[in-house]
View 1 (cartoon, rainbow, N blue to C red):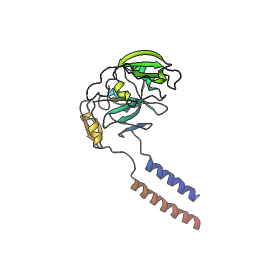
View 2: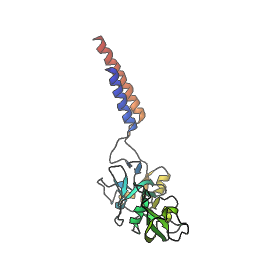
View 3: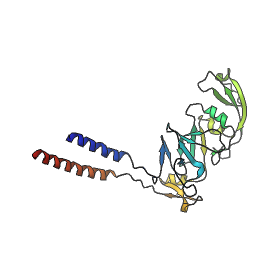
View 4: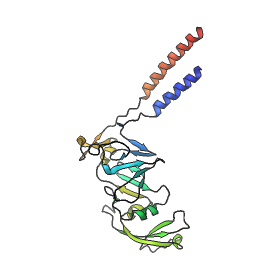
Amino acid sequence: MLNFQKLSLLLTLLFLVVKPATGKNLCADKCGHVRIEFPFYLRDKNLNHTTDYPLEFGLVCTQQNEPMLKLPAVPIPLFVRKIDYKYTLIEIYDPQNCLADQLMKLNNASITPFRFLKYFGRPPPKFDVSFFRCDSLSCPISLLESHNDVVDPRLVSCTKLKDVSVEWWWSWYFQQKLFMEWSKPDCGYCEAQGLKCKWKNGTNGGTECYACRTKRIPTSTVVHIATGMQYYSDYYAMIFLFC
């Protein structure tokens, strides 16, 4: 009986130490492994987009805990793997491991307020890209830069679907990942200092940094509580034995 009580007490205290308190005043949310904080937010929250968060940075957390970005001019949802708040970068991927198919649907849609990575410090130029359908591959859609003289042997038996001129090729080419960046709100300098970011003076103009204070119970406090509860548990157990 007493051993069971002690085990229950230990598990409760471990829960308090490991799991921080949740609430609307915390500085960040989480969807899967992605940390979500200003300027991003979860759309299921009741927020004031004038004083809290910019409307376009809303994310949906799917039932599979995958953050998803929906932009007005983009015909497909954009799944987010990582957000780098210091360098203001967002990595887009396809949960089905067929990003080329998603890029074909994306085409030249506007991704405002985001943009594709700069090309040697300049806005990305247009690249001519060809899409192929290859039913023999795990991802049936493949792409190749149109003027590329090297023939990919995997594409020999494929059917060309279309040629397009796109800005995202430079962002995707090296690692076959799609990176986008944003310039406003600019919070990179806050993240570099280990601080959080928010609108300055409650308006959607400039930003300012602040230190995040969570509601997590300090470990020292939990230890003191545990010591006290252990003392009284032993005290009443001794009384019970002598009665």
